[in-house]
Length: 273
Image 1 (cartoon, rainbow, N blue to C red):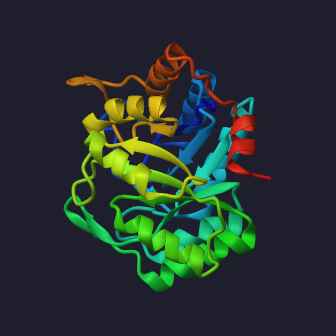
Image 2 (image 1 turned 30 degrees about the vertical axis):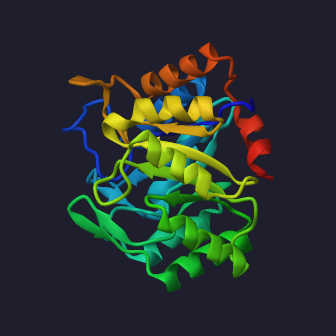
């Protein structure tokens, strides 16, 4: 079985230190956390950033500060995957700006609108096509965020229009209220709905993180964990760090005979330049 690519989603846009004091928010905290995650087995750091007011930010200076701090702290250098999702309600122009100006190796691509907990996450088709075009023109590898099966069909239509290259890399985000639930059968259905040459990872939200991660390990997929998705290590027990969540899945993967990919191995597996 191919090596496991582990992603650490270290901060997110919907979480706060009030929910878990260990959540990294400042560039310095994110750099220290990213370093520990890479040492624990993470090849990718999925990055949202915060402003000086601790609120989610799409400001380019905030992204630059965190990216530079993470690169300086980490050896080997992880793939830094920027979020273009922002916080729910962020204007598309702000969400696009980080990939256009900063040209990361990889970034997230949300392709469909949906109810998202108590809000609505808008991704207008015209904006999605515009954003996908930027990915292609800039050579940024997209990770397509899939919250429900219809998003796979949208992605395939973007491929037919020439806006996305094959193979596609999908992230199945399961367990968000308003999207597909986190049952194992949801993961199996998603996996069976994509093309055989495409790659995939799963991000289980909340209590779904651990069981879905284990399923992905044995199914041959990749895994995302971190405080963006889940603030707990066990029920009622807050995670002490993102690295603690990464270490657990790296340990499980090695126990079943599947090695964890280094950042450079992940680059080769995902087709990054």
